[in-house]
Image (cartoon, rainbow, N blue to C red; front, top):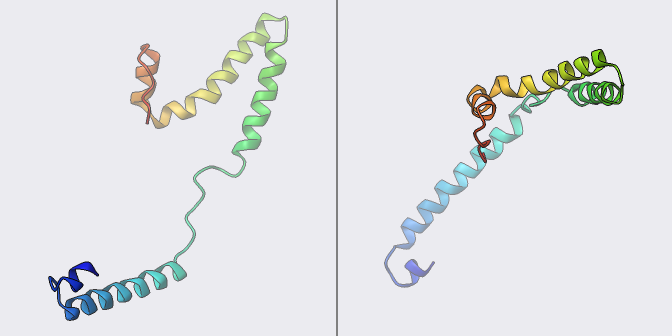
Length: 103
């Protein structure tokens, strides 16, 4: 608006840009109205799975038997390995003692 008032830009250019923006807005509104929802990023049963695994882990860690503690180690691996498989570089850096990246 200041450019128009200082005569640095003509009203015709302002109207043309406004028309283009309105057309783009209509295009995006139509696109969003007909777009499908993206698939979920996490499996719907993932929370249930982790809840069960953590309950098992709790029971095993409170056991006096060595074999239960071995099972606990397996449960811990099953909870950690899926996240490492998505970030193999991060996993190798973590295992080597490097600090986990901030991002």
